[in-house]
Image (cartoon, rainbow, N blue to C red; front, side, top):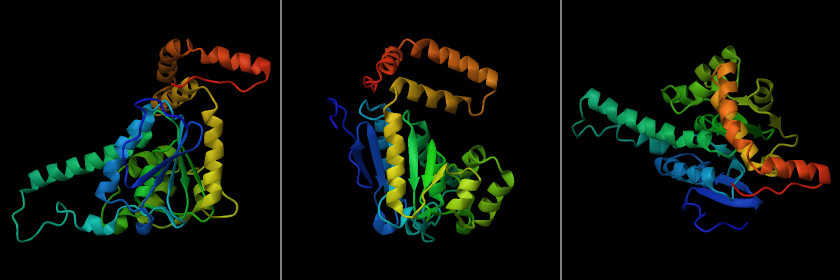
Length: 290
């Protein structure tokens, strides 16, 4: 699709960015030879990409998936993780005292958390199209998305306890908000057991499951949904996401007040008149870029 002057994405080695439909960006985690596992260079590319998509006038919806037939992502690259100098210092070199080591580790975790949170903070709706293995960090990523759908063959697991740590990139904070079943959440987080698409749909973790299994079906469904949402007023869609996210942990009264303030500006958009005219004329509305 046509990009405006200056509307160009950042260079990415570990993510593919395409526009298969007007205003629909498809972001693909691109490390299939490693089952799309995340090393530090991978997650450090993520913030600039999603910050770009958040404000790009050429983007209204984002589809997020994993390259290759086997996995959305298997989480952290275990080899890269094991080589982290903070976690596995060289016994031949001196190490800072525990307080200074803790400060370094906290900053490292904070950076990683902030990188993944850019998915949640993206102004545009993000639909996660999940397939194959979705382990560890896959859950952290998918709970940042607005909508989650999956192929029938998808296998999920919150794997961090098997690595000797508590999940620290967002799952333990966001999953209880996504799925309102505390017993089930503690079950999968404490045991690191795997669960499939049927169970994920039953508890409300995903809203759609493919019928035939495999990646292509879930990508097509994600694109169908994205095309539908991209056809709506970008003012209305982005406002709806903003208000829903802001109201997530607030009272109804606070949510109503925020909506009133937000719409006192947003209702002045020409999109309202365009949507009304299009409905009366029985045609598809055409909305300006935002």
